[in-house]
Image (cartoon, rainbow, N blue to C red; front, top):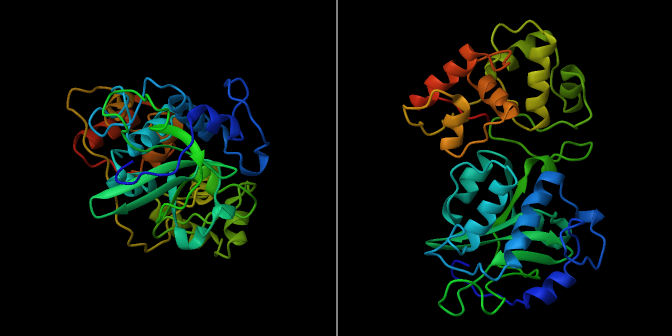
Length: 329
């Protein structure tokens, strides 16, 4: 951990006591986790993190972090997310986790809104940062965390079984949690995620942008939808199914910008000039290059009806090389 030693248990004992793990992982589950179960993507991250905790060839180190061969608290959490294919941008340590995670696949929930484990969800990233120190762990549900804590022997690996392990939850003066957006938005009411300058997320069950806007009390007239479309880089709005679906997906994610929003536009860091593929270029800067996410990037940059054509991809690639490719809200 970055400046905090916590109460822990031996790995084997803690893992056996820890409820909830994926079938076939080789870890005994002592209690059901349906109440706090994460979605399938987050389960991959959790599975990976506990696997590292169970492998004593990996210990705690701030010098030999990122699996070389060890991890510190932030590199354990960040690499778990990357392993699962979750976009955490350019996060490298507790000092930029909040800004990078929330610029991509996570929402920040301050501790004042959490208060206790009753409001935590499996997969929540617990975070504290003050001055030059901080700490982060991954909440597993049922009052258990997995995290990297401290170097107890000054050697690589984990001779004590306590440097990286599963342990009982403790309150570490957390400032809040980073919650994966699909988990934050689950349920019929939308889940409460609101990006800066955006409408609150609607429920996931809506198939009509008109009904979805009405559900959150927003004017759904054609005139207002045209303004909303323009604010979200959907050009020449005419109410086509593709345009409405783009707006609906943004609204479900809590990323549909309000007309007149002054929220700051964020850009991806520029890639190297040698790339001739938008997929390779995005991967080179640690960004999700999937078709689904490229569609969101395209929409954020005024490229309507994205289908992955060479012209569309070249347009995005040129913007990325120039450092002018906007991040989706």
